[in-house]
Structure formats: C-alpha cells, structure tokens
Image (cartoon, rainbow, N blue to C red; front, side, top):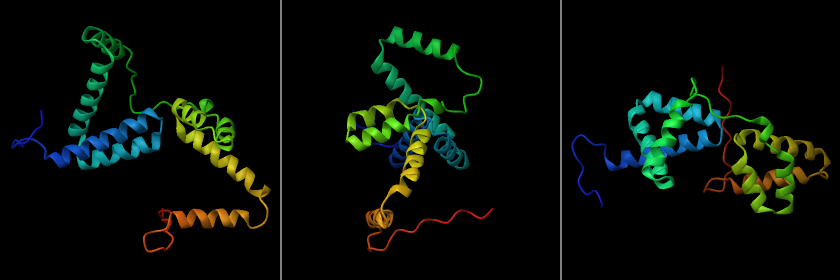
Length: 177
C-alpha cells in the first residue's frame, strides 16, 4: 500500500527518507565496529534533536529484521533473551583488534581474490583496525618502490579524485585546537 497523503502530525516523506538514511548509517557504523563514525553520527543526531525519529526508525528496521528471520513466537523469545543479556553500557560498539588480519587482506588484494577480501571485511568486527593495518602495510612498502613510482601513484589518485573542473580536490586542513 502506498502512502499518498501526509497527515498533519507526521514527518514529511523527505524527512522520513533522510532519517532512514541516517539510521542505516548509524547501524552500519555499529555493525562494523566503527566507533568514530558511530559517535560522530550520534553527536549530529543529538545536536539536531532527531533522537525520537531515528530511534523509531532503528526500532522499525530491527522489527523488520526479526519478523523476516523468525516466526512470531520465536522472534519474541529471541528479543526477550537479548533484553536479558543487554550490557549496562550500550554506547560502545564491538571492537576486536586481534580479529583484523591485515596480512591476509594484503595477500587477497594482491591475488585479486575478491571473495576473500569481502569475507575478511564482513567478518572483521572493527574495520578501522583492518584498514589501519592495510595503511601500515602500504607505508612499509613505500620505501621499496623504485624512485618516482610513489609520486606516479599519488598523481593517479589525485586525478581520480579531482573535482569536475579538473582541479585536484582539496584536502581539508586539520582543525586548529
């Protein structure tokens, strides 16, 4: 059933869609253990006073997931079990530095093994550690490149990330403390 009429006390459709997007961003950050992205998005939502709308959408998304995954009676049992096991501090996301295997990621990327790369990313609770390990590996490899190769790679990256006028996109400066 398509909703064609907006009630006076409801959010406009555009705001609902924006809130769904923000709820999904928050869920993705939590799911992948990206505490920085989670905290940033949460801070933005709190500043804007959108807590109720986004909380409603998060609950709706969770209810849909439970409804699709379980029969009604089983879904209620799963939710009751989750409620009993709820941690006291729910503000932090799962972080597991030891689960991030950057060496396997480098090998899989080098071998062009897309399935392994996807599996590694999907199975790593905190992808910030996985990507951090990848950055560290690249930094360790840079001195091994022949003269001028690093500059060519940087030039290629800049050309891929230039704005529509062909000018390189600027890198914002760090904020002054």
